[in-house]
Amino acid sequence: MMFIRNCLIPEWCLLYGASIWGVRSYSCINAVHHRAMGFFFGTGKYTPNAAVRGDMGWRPILVEQWKSICNNKYSCLTYNVTRINKKIFIWALNKGNCRCKNWPFNVVENLRKLELDKYIQMPFVCKQCLIDVANKVMDMHLDKWNSDLQRTSVISGILSKVRGEC
View 1 (cartoon, rainbow, N blue to C red):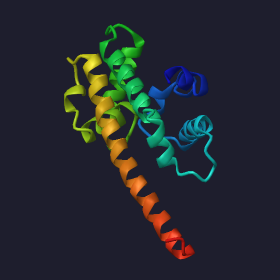
View 2 (tube, rainbow, N blue to C red; view 1 turned 180 degrees about the vertical axis):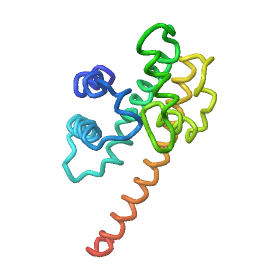
View 3 (cartoon, rainbow, N blue to C red; view 1 turned 90 degrees about the vertical axis):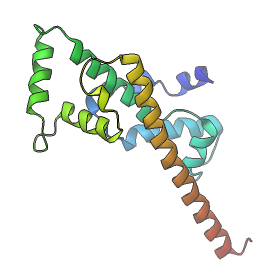
View 4 (cartoon, rainbow, N blue to C red; view 1 turned 135 degrees about the horizontal axis):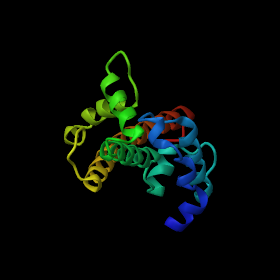
Protein backbone atom coordinates (compact mmCIF):
# COMPACT_ATOMS: atom_id res chain seq x y z
CA MET A 1 0.00 0.00 0.00
CA MET A 2 2.83 2.44 0.83
CA PHE A 3 4.49 1.64 -2.50
CA ILE A 4 1.35 2.61 -4.39
CA ARG A 5 0.94 5.74 -2.27
CA ASN A 6 4.51 6.82 -2.96
CA CYS A 7 4.05 6.26 -6.69
CA LEU A 8 0.75 8.10 -6.92
CA ILE A 9 1.38 11.03 -4.65
CA PRO A 10 4.99 11.78 -3.89
CA GLU A 11 4.69 13.59 -0.59
CA TRP A 12 8.26 14.75 -0.77
CA CYS A 13 7.22 16.83 -3.77
CA LEU A 14 3.92 18.06 -2.32
CA LEU A 15 5.41 18.90 1.04
CA TYR A 16 8.50 20.68 -0.23
CA GLY A 17 8.85 23.69 2.03
CA ALA A 18 5.84 22.67 4.14
CA SER A 19 7.49 23.87 7.29
CA ILE A 20 7.64 27.38 5.84
CA TRP A 21 4.00 27.41 4.66
CA GLY A 22 2.92 27.20 8.24
CA VAL A 23 -0.02 25.52 9.86
CA ARG A 24 -2.74 26.32 7.35
CA SER A 25 -4.40 23.68 5.24
CA TYR A 26 -4.18 24.37 1.50
CA SER A 27 -7.02 23.38 -0.80
CA CYS A 28 -4.75 22.86 -3.82
CA ILE A 29 -2.64 20.29 -1.98
CA ASN A 30 -5.72 18.57 -0.57
CA ALA A 31 -7.21 18.46 -4.09
CA VAL A 32 -4.13 16.63 -5.42
CA HIS A 33 -4.29 14.24 -2.47
CA HIS A 34 -8.01 13.54 -3.01
CA ARG A 35 -7.54 13.13 -6.75
CA ALA A 36 -4.80 10.56 -6.19
CA MET A 37 -7.05 8.62 -3.80
CA GLY A 38 -9.96 8.80 -6.25
CA PHE A 39 -7.72 7.63 -9.09
CA PHE A 40 -6.48 4.69 -7.04
CA PHE A 41 -10.05 3.63 -6.16
CA GLY A 42 -11.51 4.48 -9.56
CA THR A 43 -14.25 6.63 -8.06
CA GLY A 44 -16.19 9.27 -9.92
CA LYS A 45 -15.84 12.97 -9.41
CA TYR A 46 -19.10 13.13 -7.45
CA THR A 47 -18.00 10.64 -4.79
CA PRO A 48 -17.73 12.44 -1.44
CA ASN A 49 -14.14 13.06 -0.34
CA ALA A 50 -14.99 11.94 3.20
CA ALA A 51 -15.98 8.50 1.94
CA VAL A 52 -12.83 8.13 -0.16
CA ARG A 53 -10.60 9.31 2.72
CA GLY A 54 -12.20 6.78 5.07
CA ASP A 55 -11.81 3.88 2.68
CA MET A 56 -8.27 4.78 1.75
CA GLY A 57 -6.94 5.13 5.29
CA TRP A 58 -4.10 7.47 4.35
CA ARG A 59 -2.92 10.02 6.84
CA PRO A 60 -3.93 13.52 5.84
CA ILE A 61 -1.36 15.88 4.37
CA LEU A 62 -1.77 18.15 7.39
CA VAL A 63 -0.19 15.51 9.65
CA GLU A 64 2.92 15.37 7.46
CA GLN A 65 2.96 19.16 7.25
CA TRP A 66 2.92 19.41 11.06
CA LYS A 67 5.74 16.89 11.34
CA SER A 68 7.78 19.02 8.96
CA ILE A 69 6.98 22.14 11.00
CA CYS A 70 8.08 20.47 14.24
CA ASN A 71 11.30 19.22 12.66
CA ASN A 72 12.09 22.72 11.45
CA LYS A 73 11.27 24.28 14.83
CA TYR A 74 13.46 21.73 16.61
CA SER A 75 16.31 22.45 14.19
CA CYS A 76 15.98 26.19 14.76
CA LEU A 77 15.98 25.75 18.52
CA THR A 78 19.09 23.55 18.47
CA TYR A 79 21.23 25.62 16.09
CA ASN A 80 24.54 26.89 17.39
CA VAL A 81 24.18 30.45 18.73
CA THR A 82 26.82 31.75 16.32
CA ARG A 83 24.83 30.76 13.19
CA ILE A 84 22.93 33.45 11.36
CA ASN A 85 19.86 31.16 11.14
CA LYS A 86 19.70 30.98 14.93
CA LYS A 87 20.01 34.76 15.25
CA ILE A 88 17.20 35.31 12.74
CA PHE A 89 15.02 32.72 14.47
CA ILE A 90 15.55 34.35 17.89
CA TRP A 91 14.80 37.78 16.38
CA ALA A 92 11.57 36.44 14.80
CA LEU A 93 10.63 34.73 18.06
CA ASN A 94 11.05 37.97 20.00
CA LYS A 95 9.31 40.04 17.32
CA GLY A 96 6.25 37.79 17.05
CA ASN A 97 3.08 38.86 18.86
CA CYS A 98 -0.62 39.30 18.11
CA ARG A 99 0.19 42.30 15.87
CA CYS A 100 3.11 40.62 14.07
CA LYS A 101 1.96 37.05 13.40
CA ASN A 102 5.12 35.54 11.96
CA TRP A 103 5.98 31.86 11.55
CA PRO A 104 7.33 31.20 15.09
CA PHE A 105 4.34 32.99 16.63
CA ASN A 106 1.84 30.94 14.61
CA VAL A 107 3.58 27.68 15.46
CA VAL A 108 3.59 28.51 19.18
CA GLU A 109 -0.09 29.54 19.10
CA ASN A 110 -1.09 26.36 17.32
CA LEU A 111 0.93 24.20 19.69
CA ARG A 112 -1.01 25.84 22.51
CA LYS A 113 -4.31 25.11 20.73
CA LEU A 114 -3.22 21.46 20.47
CA GLU A 115 -2.45 21.53 24.21
CA LEU A 116 1.21 20.72 23.58
CA ASP A 117 2.78 23.56 25.56
CA LYS A 118 5.72 21.39 26.59
CA TYR A 119 7.09 21.56 23.01
CA ILE A 120 7.24 25.35 22.84
CA GLN A 121 10.62 25.67 24.57
CA MET A 122 13.62 23.42 24.91
CA PRO A 123 14.37 20.84 26.23
CA PHE A 124 12.20 18.24 24.53
CA VAL A 125 12.76 15.09 22.50
CA CYS A 126 12.04 15.65 18.82
CA LYS A 127 10.76 12.12 18.13
CA GLN A 128 8.27 12.31 20.99
CA CYS A 129 7.17 15.73 19.77
CA LEU A 130 6.51 14.33 16.29
CA ILE A 131 4.50 11.44 17.70
CA ASP A 132 2.40 13.65 19.99
CA VAL A 133 1.74 16.28 17.32
CA ALA A 134 0.83 13.63 14.74
CA ASN A 135 -1.59 12.01 17.20
CA LYS A 136 -3.26 15.33 18.08
CA VAL A 137 -3.60 16.44 14.46
CA MET A 138 -4.89 12.99 13.49
CA ASP A 139 -7.50 13.16 16.28
CA MET A 140 -8.63 16.55 14.98
CA HIS A 141 -8.79 15.13 11.46
CA LEU A 142 -10.84 12.13 12.59
CA ASP A 143 -13.33 14.39 14.36
CA LYS A 144 -13.70 16.50 11.22
CA TRP A 145 -13.94 13.36 9.09
CA ASN A 146 -16.72 11.95 11.27
CA SER A 147 -18.71 15.19 11.05
CA ASP A 148 -18.15 15.33 7.26
CA LEU A 149 -19.27 11.73 6.92
CA GLN A 150 -22.42 12.33 8.97
CA ARG A 151 -23.19 15.50 7.01
CA THR A 152 -22.74 13.62 3.72
CA SER A 153 -24.97 10.73 4.83
CA VAL A 154 -27.66 13.17 6.02
CA ILE A 155 -27.60 14.98 2.68
CA SER A 156 -27.79 11.66 0.82
CA GLY A 157 -30.76 10.61 2.95
CA ILE A 158 -32.60 13.86 2.28
CA LEU A 159 -31.96 13.64 -1.46
CA SER A 160 -33.19 10.03 -1.62
CA LYS A 161 -36.42 11.03 0.18
CA VAL A 162 -36.94 13.91 -2.24
CA ARG A 163 -36.46 11.57 -5.20
CA GLY A 164 -38.80 8.98 -3.63
CA GLU A 165 -36.16 6.25 -3.45
CA CYS A 166 -36.98 5.18 0.13
